[in-house]
Amino acid sequence: MMPTDDFECLYQGHLLAGVDEVGRGPLAGDVVAAAVILDPNAPIEGLNDSKKLTEKKRERLFDEIKEKALSWALGRASVAEIDDINILQASLLAMKRAVESLPVTPEYALIDGNKSPALSIPNETVVKGDSRVAAISAASILAKVTRDREMVALDKTYPEYGFAGHKGYPTAVHMKAIKEHGVTAIHRRSFRPVRECLMLNRTNVGLKDLI
Image (cartoon, rainbow, N blue to C red; front, side, top):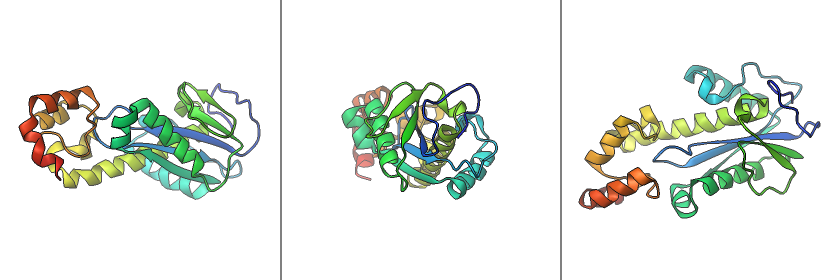
């Protein structure tokens, strides 16, 4: 695996896993992570930070990554886990689960960001790694497309909230929906806007919590 720009990895073998997560900022839904070991003999053109790609391109690359990668896996932490251990620890847990779920065991891992999960293999963090390291870019794409699809599906269960559009992020539309309709079972109660809504509108929460 070659870096996409200026990053030089300490590990120079082929069983290198790129790891990234999505969903730290939203007020609702799980945090989803992915780990990817790319095949140096099957290059994938156009890899980049998933947030910098169009939805159409992410979808195309999603299928290509799964087809060409030596190995890939997803991991997640639930809303309950986020509320229990906080979003940072939940994100690290999701990444750890993704790495440990890889069908092919990596020899080394590159983690997007500046904090690493507790892994049994050597690893290092890469700030802005999703735009600097191809394997991390691939992981960011798998994680984002997976989570986005889940939020679109949840939009059918909770149509009042507009999850298909904002994917759970605290947009004006989402905040207005929370104030009008209360908090659902997939909202993160430890996040301040949700917690404040619970405090101010407890009578509106009851029925939603039972869904």
